[in-house]
Length: 114
Length: 111
Image 1 (tube, chains in turn purple, red):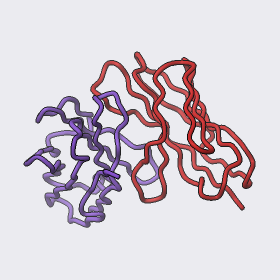
Image 2 (cartoon, each protein chain N blue to C red):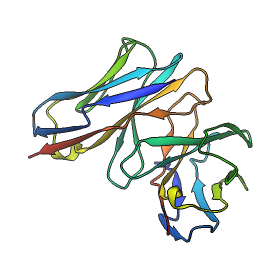
Image 3 (tube, rainbow over the protein chains, first blue to last red):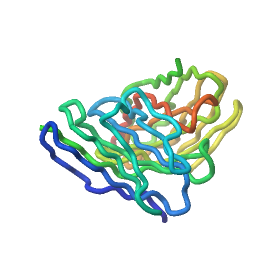
Image 4 (cartoon, each protein chain N blue to C red):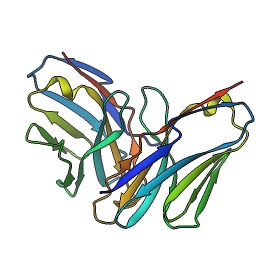
């Protein structure tokens, strides 16, 4: 069964360092998303991406964040200068039947900023 | 502001004891309501999509229903393997497929 794959599963980084979280969406999907979940809190939307551009972003997704689809299979989230409050679980998701169909999530990358 | 509230926050059931989880929502034009299951340390796993009031979907011991203000996830004769956090999320017509999640209901089913 097709699935969304995220790497690494866990990343520890020092405050101020850049991190890149990687995702391989389901192969025929066209809509891509990043969400995050701080421990014990709700899953929060960060950004949606379609047709090689951002279609919507939340207030959380400030200038420190960027997304890229460098090739036909990968989708990345970059945080330029990490802060302690960026520590969270980051989920990539993709949807194939249109923006308003079900999104399938990866297993997440746990980011710990120390 | 679009909002999703789930209740209860936590629910403990004995195996075989049926119950319902509630998801109340306020959204500017509902495009879809989604139920996901999340196991500890894992990503949300898709369960159901509901698009219009009166719609129902079933999968094994789970049944999801939708009204104009809320959705219910009914669990019939649950088993310990149904223990998880159940997340409700909505999509509004004014956005681009973004999901707005509730805080979830953590279900524990004891044998």
